[in-house]
Length: 160
Image 1 (spheres, rainbow, N blue to C red):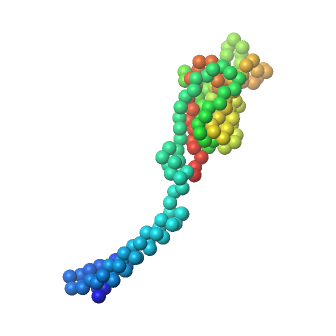
Image 2 (cartoon, helix red, strand yellow; image 1 turned 135 degrees about the horizontal axis):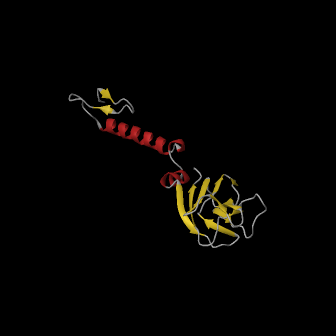
Image 3 (tube, rainbow, N blue to C red; image 1 turned 90 degrees about the vertical axis):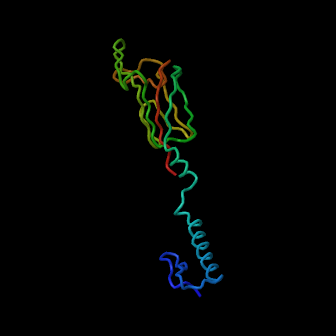
């Protein structure tokens, strides 16, 4: 004889002192649990994908690179950033070269496929530029790979 009460959610047997359980009752309960568990596991809307799990575990990376003075330099992150910020250590993001009367741009921001002057996102990271000559009057000199300057970057991974 099944139990005189049932659980609210799966309607499993909930035994009272006077109930007389039978093997069929336990087997029925086990089948209900197994069916509910299978339905849950197979419902992809209730579970994270591998990419989503990776994003939750590490949604961003940060690091540094030291400028080598080359006109262009690539930094590999292993993914195309959804958002990237680059700042120099020990310098302001925009300073004035008082000798050349030229603004020095040492800051970059990029999102999606667009970025500020001197930075471009790639499929595996980003590329920065370093001006090799004095720019035209009124334009800033791009300084994102200046010799011996340490740059800090913060990159957010694309979600899922």
